[in-house]
Image 1 (tube, rainbow over the protein chains, first blue to last red):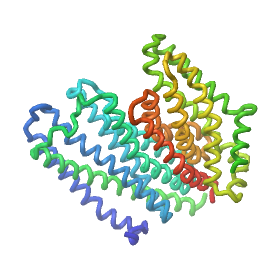
Image 2 (cartoon, rainbow over the protein chains, first blue to last red):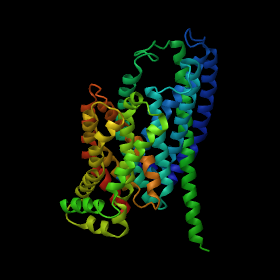
Image 3 (cartoon, each protein chain N blue to C red):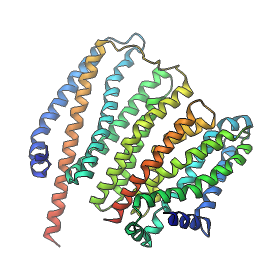
Image 4 (cartoon, rainbow over the protein chains, first blue to last red):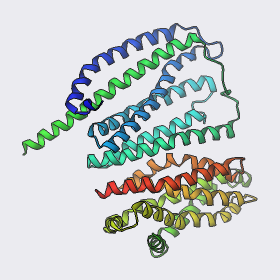
Length: 237
Length: 211
């Protein structure tokens, strides 16, 4: 692992991996979407059940993104490694994007299902808060000019957020049961039939590969940007 | 540590201090709400716990960006950081001072506003603010530490701090409505925030001091 903490070695590995990851992601998307359109409509949700294949993996990826960002932040804070800082920074906009995708698709699914674009449902609300956490992180990073300092400061924010996220999740769930009763989402819910599980897992894998492809690309770009800047600075006026 | 506490409280209480400002802001926000939603006392009584909690959080945020900034700008924070008491202890004193000059006065004012909102009993609201506002000061201090070196840090601070404060508002407003189980959860959140925050705050301040 530490072997690849060297930016040059990382670049070698990453540029070898990215085409494969990207191709795997595209193939899985094709299979997943095909399977998703072939499943029979749900007896309750009808055709809208297909939104699930886009929506649920986006939400999973968004949560994975925060986990990876927090892990990279911890590594960056403890071992002071610039590559980990770069990785954490690169994960944030992706996480924000996937969270937004989850929110939008959730809203599109909610309109026919719940009869409203937005419902103060526990999961929707905690995802909105997750989106704000991502946006705050990005805003904080952009506001601090000194990049090394920005990395450390944002790492603390990411870790504070990681500690607080389960509490937020719990409090929002607690709040939802308080306000809503169990009118819309029954606890336990109907078990997902295995017909729907295959496309769901295929799409989840596709999303995960897509995230890693974009993540590695962003880290590569950032490393190259720094090198270009340093080369420019070394050259002088 | 107590010297910092008393100094900060004195500074906030005297000319241009933030204590009165936060209090006035709290009252002003609470006054605007009936103007916005109408003067129906039953409706106001229903939304009062939530509205007053949100107003209290916003008022506490108002004074936060100056928590370390003034000392940072005139250099006294560097001296404090080098002094024998650990920066964690200093951060705790700062949080306590912030609470004494915002959270506590807001809590003391809340029964008056509760009457204006038509709440029949303000005891639950009072207790929930008393127990919950330290969490607001504690988590806010992390944000103040993180945004210390940013010139317009006051703009970015709410975006960072508000999502983290969601549990405080949820449990706080719940406790103010005397929902079963809300008060212990609020107390737990507040205690955890007050214990963990000084470490995160001190780490953030240390980074921004450049050591």
